[in-house]
Length: 404
Image (cartoon, rainbow, N blue to C red; front, side, top):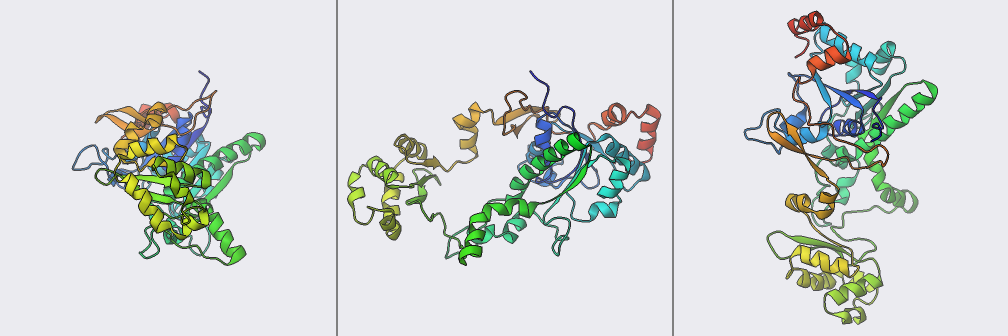
């Protein structure tokens, strides 16, 4: 097998939560050496997020943390100590890339802004990613992805027109921004390879996600139209929605985009005459009578297992999918085939599940190197093997409380 694509890339990871660490996880999957810095006095918030391997939760049992940090090394540092700060600067000298996800201005307050770090490593690439970016009137706003999806307009478009905004699930922007962060780092590495120049990347997580609202923004700027929540309805596809299926809280999603797919749907429903019903004969008519049409579809889906309905509709060429829960995802034949869930050896819990890399390069495939590190797991390796410290210096760091 060929050497990993990023085998010669060294990353100093000062990120936490999801939006930051998910980006460096992608780099680690392709062979980058990622050294994560954490403190025992202020641990990653993901260590407090369910699900946990065991209850009551403890810092090493959060599976989300395992997922975001698999394949990385870790050193614990107390940056309030002079010795801890010196270790960090030595890691900056070692690194090709430094990544941080603090609120805007925090690195400057700590004395570790880009200019300070470039003084010790002139070709350094640094990624700063926070909610709103490093500059501007909202730069100091420190929030999470669930707040960012509201600020950026997603919340107003999700839900039903007669109810309060529902918002997309979870910290939505946390799952979008890492894709842009990783791509920006790769571009900066390519630029440095060709020019020798490092650079500072300022990536606003809100802006990374807002481009998915491009059509709504363009419709307003060009036509003055303001989009609003429409439930599961679609401007073009009809029927389009999530329909009840047999069982407890089971559903199947269906989207019909044209007359041919509607004819196929009508055949599956056992009522080809629906295509000749004036209420449903054209897309315009179907939109005008969508409640009656939804009732016809729901009458068919309610009597069927969601997987049975999905299979029958897909076989006929009608776009349809089970509304999958966690158990469905783990058993999904396509995800199983792609080995989407990997079980990694863990020092405390035997094994732990993480998601596999989402992309596959044919010549330099990704590989998850191992489970996420426990607090301070790699202190000795990082200090001795990476920084070249001798035993006396490591002992002095322990005595100075720098490794806390």
